[in-house]
Image (cartoon, rainbow, N blue to C red; front, top):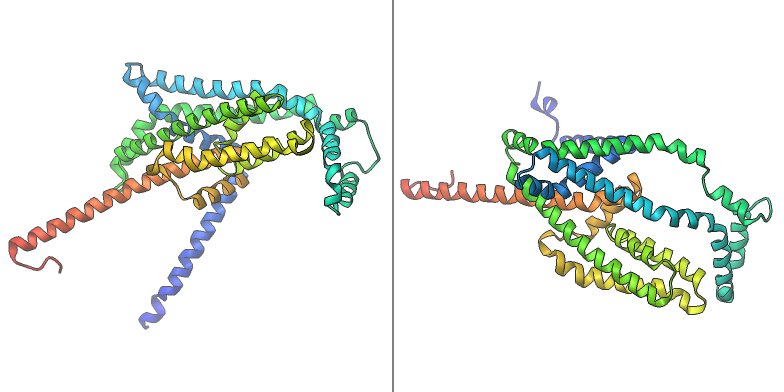
Length: 367
């Protein structure tokens, strides 16, 4: 039997490997999406553990047991989550009860520019037919349908509590045992070592700290500007600007749309567009000049890669997926950079050894 019948063609091997990779990637995406209730808190916990690992190390260096450092970081993260929930819950609850009123006010605000939009009336009629097919109802009736009842809210509690338990458990045990895991990887892997993993952790933490500082200053500036414009709840808008700025591109875009709607409800005329326009201008200045100077080029990431990653993770897991995208990319980039540096040093050392051997024996360096 000839070798051509036994060994497959090189192109055939490439096609088979590409098909296997595509099938594996599709299966992984399906698994992540299907098991969202497990994988979302698990991945979030790993990302939070990488971000706050230097803080746990600082507590360890002070002489506290490793379990105390892990528990302190866990309590800090849970406190921040609960504080944000308690802070925004009254505002969100009030907003949802007033959605029908806001809708009518937005329609009135848009009525002044109907002459410039010939199809606006038809669009409004179609939307009215979809939103209210049985005729006009009161705001209270509409609000009753918009706001979920207490029984519906309570039905989500077991799922949310389970995800919080997964998040807390994974975060605590990751911080508690990550040094042992890194040492195991160091012994078993020829590419990764403990120093690389710790350095990647430090880079992600440094990036997160720098971005948090920039976003906090930006949120405070948004509070001052919106207060000067007379925007209600300017403090909440500032906190929102601080939070959405962690989700690059998509977060500020969604926030600008919210400001545009709020401006139409609160103000009249061209002033309705002022909050969103000023916010977008401030955000562009911050993104183009402030953040690059603070973060530095050593952790810069390709904007296309960032955008595609954000779209993928938000499609996969919603807004919480956007929180995973950027730290994960930074961690992978820094880890890949460290691996490439090690491989480059190994290659240079091997070339130098071959050159030295050739110089000592008089034989050519390359065989």
